[in-house]
Length: 107
Image (cartoon, rainbow, N blue to C red; front, side):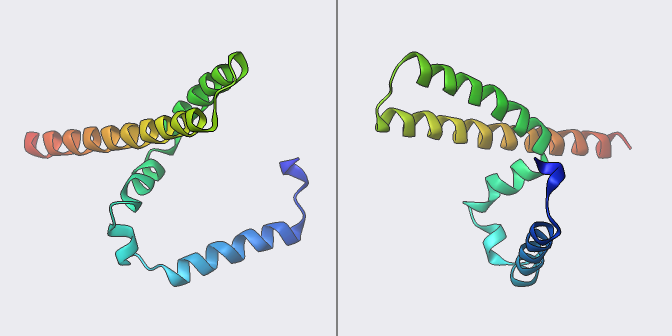
């Protein structure tokens, strides 16, 4: 399916990316907000966060298929997944900074 993207869809994606790049500069206050920080950290460690997402998605599918959770329970499952991804990204970022500090001290 993804291999058959029409040129107009690719052009649309590139135009949205261009508009975001124009309206949100690197020094934008939005990128320094508490809400944006987990998203930025997750983007820096996208492979690890994606791998966790696959595992959490399978686990959530099993929970939903075995039982019929209420809307409140589904929202709780989704919230736990988002929190897990944010915590993983934060932990990976902290580990990266710790290793960088240790290597700079060794020099």
